Amino acid sequence: LVATFLPCVVGIQGIADAYHQILPQIRLYRPTNFSSIINHVARFAAHLLQQGTAAQYFTLLIITDGDLDQTRQAIVNASNLPMSIIIVGVGEANF
Figure 1 (tube, rainbow, N blue to C red):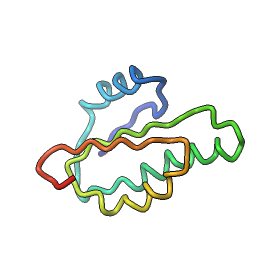
Figure 2 (cartoon, helix red, strand yellow):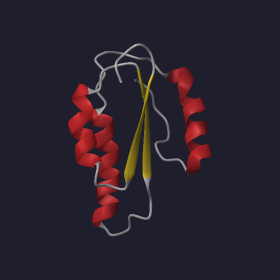
Figure 3 (tube, rainbow, N blue to C red):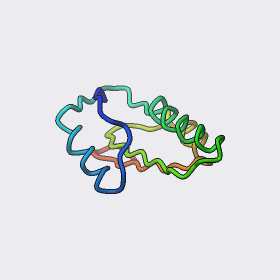
Figure 4 (cartoon, one colour):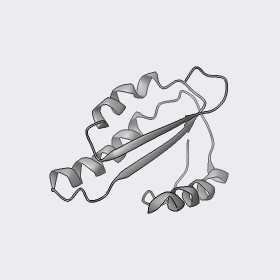
């Protein structure tokens, strides 16, 4: 994925609007590795959690057609933070 957009939105409608805004700019590439994106969002969540101001909750939506083996540790590391990771698999891969 090579795209740039405002990374913070509010609510489900904000997620949908961001998705529709970014969709025309997306270019898929291999190998599929989302650990850097997960770690980036996790740093935001961890920072707020450490400050005791974790009034914000982060939702990371990943739409992929590839294998997620390389990202599993990043998901595990982020599992105790105020964030959700939603992975939508498309295509023929084994999700």
